[in-house]
Image (tube, rainbow, N blue to C red; front, top):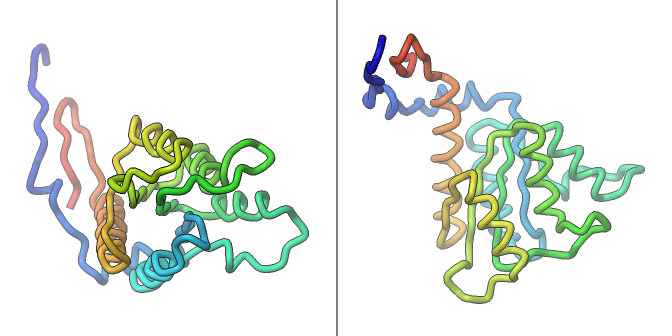
Length: 186
């Protein structure tokens, strides 16, 4: 078809998965939680509660247990064993590891390399106190992906739940292309 138009079914694009469907989708899925541990204990607790509430398994550094590998190998292995990467970037970049990256930066790069679904949350940009390397990391990520701000742990929990629901809806009603037409299966 020469000069044809592309049809997008907007109604299908806005379909939401029910809580039961999200729980069924999330069952057995692993969600890696990334942030500076000491800077965000309440946010990490909110992430754990959200992931548990939808029926997925949170993968958090503090739960990896005793291992005979270095810390950076342990957390990168946790990323590789997950399907979803959820990061909470704040104002600090963190300590640089031997490879020159902070742990959260290395985890983000590993998630990208392994094709994990991304959930990128940013806090503290408006304070003017963000580390230069952290600002660079976030801006670099925004060249390819969207991010979501949050105001407090309750707001973060709501935004995380919405993002996981959106991921479930995308997989439960995937996009299909027939010729030049693009639509969601329902």
